[in-house]
Image (cartoon, rainbow, N blue to C red):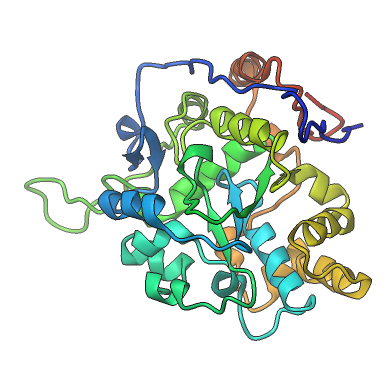
Length: 336
C-alpha cells in the first residue's frame, strides 16, 4: 500500500535534489514534428513569448495570500483548479468556470490561441486589479526556479502523477493541441490542393524516448518532480500531493487542500467539492473541461508502454529516483 509522504519540515533535509543526466536517443522533438520553445533551458509551450515571459517571471507582484497550482502537464492540473474553484465558491460550480478563478499565469504573455483558452483573456492589468480581500489563484507549469515569486510569500500546491500515465496522457495532449504541430498544414512545394496531415510523433515508442530525455513540454518529469518534492520537505508553504492519492481518497485530499489554503474546510463544502470535481461531473457539466480531461486513474499506461520500451522506462525511472524516497502508484498494486 502506498504510504504517506515523508515529512521533513524545518529539519535537516531528508532529500537534497541534484539533477542527474538524462538519456539521449539521437533525435529531438523537432525531428518528430513536435514544436517547442526553450525558456531558461527548459522546453515550454511554443506560444509563449520569451521576452515577455522573462519579464513576467522577474517582475510579477505576488500577494501574501496568492496560491499557485503548479504541476507538470497532465498530472491533475485541471482537477486541482476545479477543486480550488469549488472550495472558494462553497462547493458549487456557479456560473463561472475554474479558468476564471484560476487562470494559467504564464499564458497572459502567450499568443492568443493559448491566452484565450487558458486565461479567459485576462490582462496583467486585470490580475493586478483583482480584490486584495481574497486570495488569487494561478495555474502554472513552472519548474521550481522559474515560478514567478515577487516579494510576498505564496502558497504552492504541487500535484504529481506516476510518469508512465503522465507520458501517455502528454502524448495525446501534444497531438491534439494545434500549437504543438511543427509542420501540420504546411503545403508541399509545387503541389496543388490541401496539404497532407502531419502528426506529432506518430511512433509512440519514439515519444517515450522524447519523454525520458526531457524533450517534451516542461522538460524532464524527473527534474521537475524531484526539485519541487525536495523543496516541499523544507517549506510548509509548499503542499506536495500525488494524483493517485487523490483518486483513492478524494475527500481526504480535498480536505488537505482546504486546510492548506484556509478556505472551504466545512464538511458540507468538502462533500460538494468531492461531487462536483469528480471525473464524471467535469466531463458532463456543460462540457467546459472536456478538452483537458481524459480518463484519469492509474495504470492505463499498460496499453501503450510495453516490452523493451517498458524496460527502458523502468531503468531510467530507477536511476533518476534513486535516493529520493519518493514512490508512485502505477496501478494494479505496483508501487515504485
